[in-house]
Image (cartoon, rainbow, N blue to C red; front, side, top):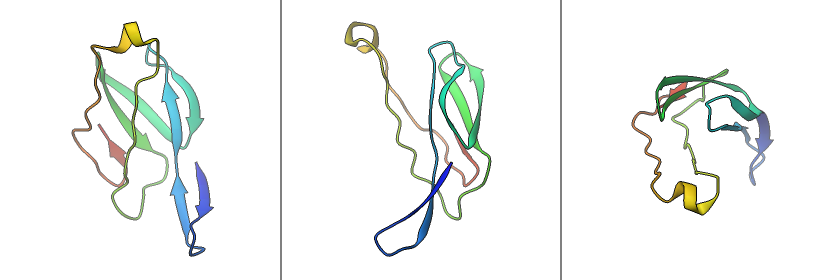
Amino acid sequence: MAIIKDSSSNKIQHIYGGLNPDGSQWCGEGFKHYRLRQGLYLIEFDRPFANLPTPICTIFGPEWETFDKSISIVDIEQIQFV
């Protein structure tokens, strides 16, 4: 997790990270992750956001292995998203 200042010098919370294809944590900090079932993960923040966060997710990998993949965020709360 990083606390950074925006253009108005307000402190904002920034969490980043990634998961490996097997579901293990690849990089990042400030969160825990739980595999609910294949392809469905709960991402829980160590420190809740003041308001609802804006998750940004992407799929990384060779294009021939990712054409049939997609990401959908189905629930967002101040402490987690699915």
